[in-house]
Image 1 (tube, rainbow, N blue to C red):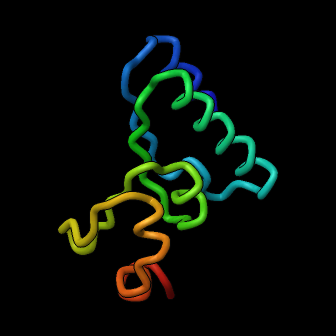
Image 2 (image 1 turned 30 degrees about the vertical axis):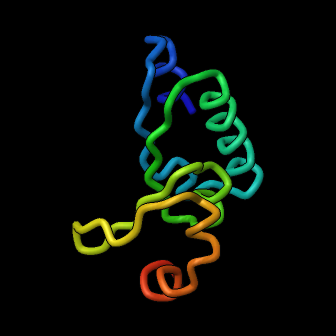
Length: 93
């Protein structure tokens, strides 16, 4: 959260966030998700890399799925949510 705060001091148009919820408790995950949502609502584009499918779907409006360095899916969050083939092949254990 400190890094996000320092980044926002520069009033950026775009921020890149890598795994912001990794290792956090569920309460802290909720707080970070709210902060990222608020940042985006204020007009800052957020490029998010996230392994948690639920968190990614909650925050994304557009999604890319990569496998072995290749983009294997691109589309809206809703399309990805209901695309069983992509989810089973690349996102579910």
